[in-house]
Length: 343
Ligand SMILES: [Zn+2]
Image (cartoon, rainbow, N blue to C red; front, side, top):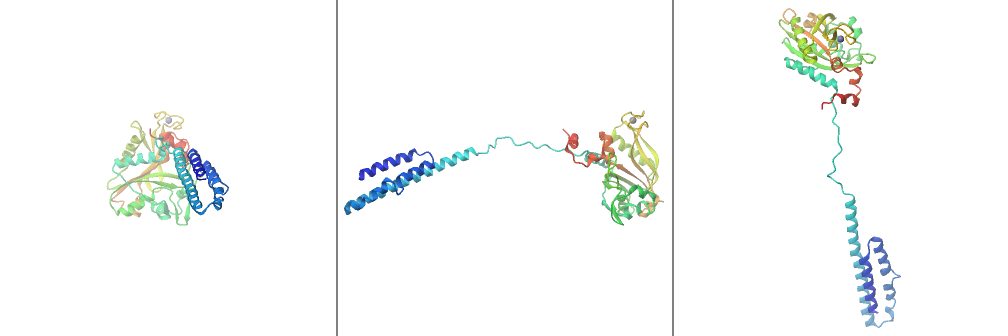
């Protein structure tokens, strides 16, 4: 009987070493260690043995059982490790693969132009001022010589927060703010910023647009300074060959007031469809600061004089790039913006 135990053990150990996966392990375990197995049936023969034989055979039986059991456990562990390694290998991340390319965005042409205009004026010794987009009636209108009943208000209808508070219709309130803060000192500032008007949006109108305000105040400032400043700006912005002309105009906060035109780039001044046959294209408005505005904001018009101008940022960008619709600046269409990406 002891021999048959040896046979059983050898057979079992061989089968265990041939196991290729956990299922086969379980099968072998079932064959050799379950209640119906050969080993267990040998248990029932113990009763027919003498006490000494029983003791010896019992010991040997238990030994065989635990040898088979240990071999099964060891093999199971070994197979588990192999299976885990196989799984890990199949899930390995290949870090040598190149990453996904992110395309770098372009700058909205609006900001390209805003930066360029700002740079040109910084080069002329201007500094950059800023003011609130939500304004009081006082700063947006009154202090700029536009009293309550002034017809100019009709052209600058805007979004009111209440009777006295509104979204600014131009960057000109920054003139009043700067004058009041400067307390009689000379001023040379520009102010780029958003402005708002109640408008039906179309290709040439937007309820939101932007201006760059300019203001120079000092003793002895005359319209020649205004012309020279804007001429330099026009040449830097649109090219050395461009000429400007001043046309008489009207703004409540300047006197005299002018519209500034540049020679048409398309026809060089001969006249074409782009300039409607005039040879010139309007780019901005300006003038000498109205004595009332100087006075209301703390400057003596007998001593000080100054000039102011307002440049439409979108207008300049439209002329520079030949953009056909002002709304494109605000639609965040990547296809539009990407055209201005620098290589
Ligand atoms: Zn033209």
